[in-house]
Length: 353
Image (cartoon, rainbow, N blue to C red; front, side, top):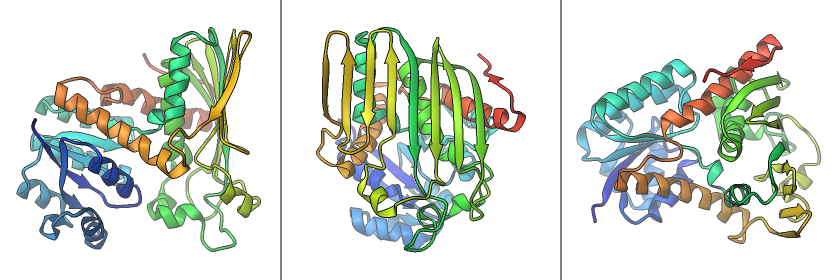
C-alpha cells in the first residue's frame, strides 16, 4: 500500500498533537516541517525523528524541494490562504487547521484554487471527533431521545486575564491571538458551531451577543449565541474571561463543555464536574458512564486529533469525501461570520442556503 508523504506547515502548540496523530497512522509519513521561526520546527523535528535538512523557515522553499502528496496546514488563520493556494498550485492535497480562513471570500478563493487543481481540500476540525460527541450522534441517529428540541453548550473559564502565576494563559499559548479583531467565536466557538451542525444539521439563523473585557486582547472574550437548527434551538454560552478559583479550575475537566440536548423522549448530558460523566435519561432507561473512555483527559484530547486525521487519510486513500470537506465546512464559517454580523447589528441574521 502506498505511503503518503506529507509536510506540516506550522509548528506551534497544536503541532505536537498533530504530529503525534500522524505517527499513529499507518500509511502516512511526515517528511518535512515548516515554521516561520525555524527553531520551533527544529525542536519538533528532533522530537519526531525528522532529519533537520527537511526543516524550513520558508514554506515555498519546502514546496519546491520536497516530494509530497499532501500538506497539513497548522499556521495562523491569516496565513492559510496563500499557503493553501501555493500547495494547490503544486498539485498537493490539503488538510487545513480551523478556522480555515479569516473571511468567507478567502475561503471561497481557497476552495476554487483546490477545485481547479483537482486536489482534496478538507478542514482539520477535531471537535466533532471527540468520542462523547460521536456517542451523542449515535444515540440521536437511533432516535433514543426522540425529536431533538433544545441543545446547550456552556463553558466559562479564564484565558484572557492575568492569573496569579503570570500572564493571561491565551497570551502564553497563542500570542498571535492578542491582535485578532475576532477572537473567541472564531477561535473556539467555531468548534461548537461545527458540532451543532454535525449533530442537528444546518443552521438557519443566528442571534449573538459578544463583549471584549480584557485589555490584553482586541477581540471578544465573552459570547452567547442562539442558533436555529432544523427545528431545534441551540444555545452556545462561552467565556474566556471568567475569573474565579484558579486552583479549582486547574482541577476541573476544562476540556469539556457542559453539554445538554433535550428531545421529546429524553435528555443526553455531558457533565464536566465533578467526575466527567456521560448521562442518558429517558422514559425507558437511565444510565451514565465516564466521559473519557481512554482513561484520561490528555489521551482523549489526543484521540480526537488522531481520529480526525485518520479520517482525512482514509478518504484520501480511498477517494472519498471527508465529513469536514471545505464545501461543507464553509457552512460552519458562514455561521461564525453571521454571529459577528448579528452581534454588531443586534439583529437575527439569516444564513444563505
